[in-house]
Image (cartoon, rainbow, N blue to C red; front, side, top):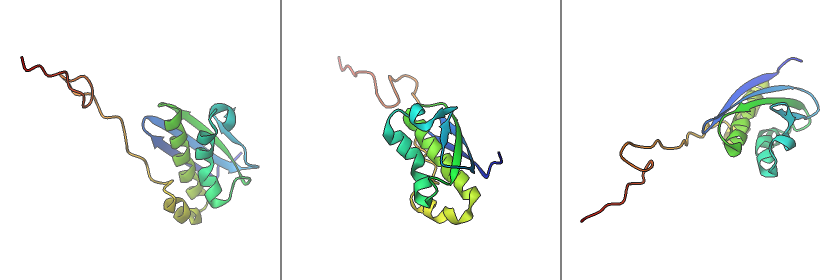
Length: 129
């Protein structure tokens, strides 16, 4: 099968490689069906959002390889990668995907822990005496 579009999506520490092919609307994540991989329906819905916006739920088969991060970050990475891949398929999809914010890389990351502290911002308890 020939890939129509390839996209890389990122969110927090999760990275997703997305391959869009012609087909009947099957989405596979790491070799499993999307509903088996993302057990919560909101995560599966989150991944499908770019397809819903362009009206291509039953036009493409999507193959996703995702690793790193947690399940919510992985769902966000899949959505970002799918939106990028759909832009490669048809440049006309760009405006609607951009307007919904699916092409924007969410840059929020966990703040690093600083030395001499308990966490990123948490300080040790101050003792006056």
